[in-house]
Length: 415
Image 1 (spheres, one colour):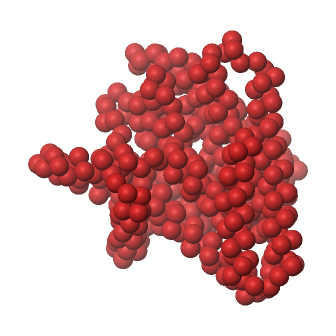
Image 2: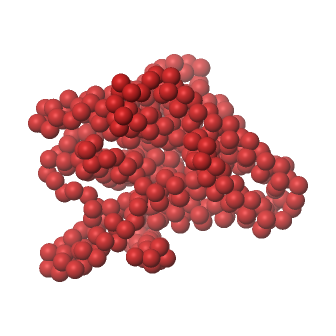
Image 3: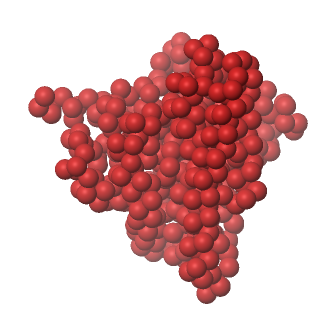
């Protein structure tokens, strides 16, 4: 199927589902779209029992979309930049210590905990899996998805102190999580004996610090170019060119594209409104990236819902997915506990920060995309189903309840 036809179908479905949600369900935008897409998929599956052609054509459409490539290489850069653009540096700087530990130490510890616990869970349920593959699963499910988090927290009315921790962590742990996944994937493909510690350290350093440095350099260059003119059409184009060119160059240099885009977005969003943009330019840039964010989020969450068509519906896999939910939540809580205890006295944390960050750490499309990049020998179908179960639970159950949970905890806190 031609790419334009696929985009057209997804756009029409997204607009239709958005209308139904806005008019009738009135759920948070991204959650509503995904729920309607999943119900739509179930209708297709039911119709498929009576008319197989409907099901086959629908599956053909979804299978023709390379979800991993579409998300990680096309959509992710725009979505991360849109989120980073509105992240205030002064608030982020105050929380830089815990955020950096959450995004590095937290991801590594969570990867190990989830991988180890799932390894024993698989053994207990009679489906033994190689430990390195379980660690790969731990790496792909550990990062919270900034795309999902940003969309949901906007409507959860979370306190700013909590929101900046969750959003800041999500923006950075995404890039770190992908790097950890790539390192483990290399070990799984080549064997632990053929991968040296120096090579792993160099890869991690190159991806993370290379991405941060590249984002700073090109972000600063774009800022200086915009500061030298006052023409909102050109300045909007410069931000668009920055995102596309930066992500492409980072990929070519084997740097972390997500981290590069996040750093550039934070730099542009904090320096440009004060010194480079006129009020007209700022308005156009903000509205342009808000529309990009809404459109791509709509497409992404509809795609997540439609992915149900190609997920292996296997009772054993689904059971493992359900049992993996508390493993993922408990591991995240434990991984966050160290930095929270370390910075509790220095920084003014709201009550039960660990619980709220655990429940507010939404998993999303990035985890599904990474699961799709596994090879068949790595139990890809099992991990894809397990990941999908966790993501659906995370977005729907956690996403719908994080707002009420925040209100309940804050209502019990002495003012």
